[in-house]
Image (cartoon, rainbow, N blue to C red; front, side, top):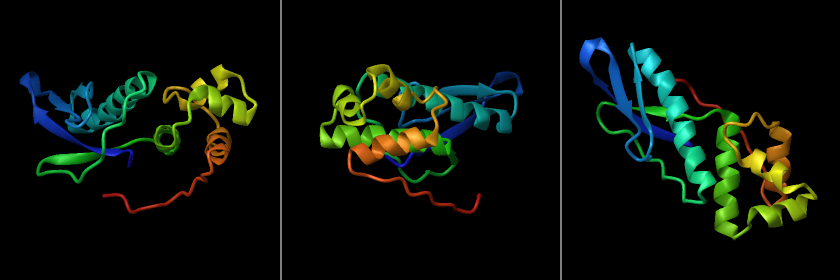
Length: 143
């Protein structure tokens, strides 16, 4: 998964802004301004993806934004964690197997996959290495 998904912003009553991440169940949010709504969109996306991971479901696939949609990115750590989760699913590696390979306790693996947990990037890199991958960081111009 490219951890950037399009979101829509729509005017709501009282001058507020309502939006959702249409390709991600549970990605609804609201804000008093457009900027606040976009910040809340990041939180909504993170929470929705955390539910997908907790239930073992496939993450939604990113796509280009349609007219009147904007891209909602995850943090670098969130992107690394979703890449780890996708790779584990693709290779059929479960949490217990990853814990065995890393010589970690199962709760440590759960935390490294938890989008709400402030893991150290080195932990995610170690987990990726245990399944034969490495993390590569890229930078792009802001829109």
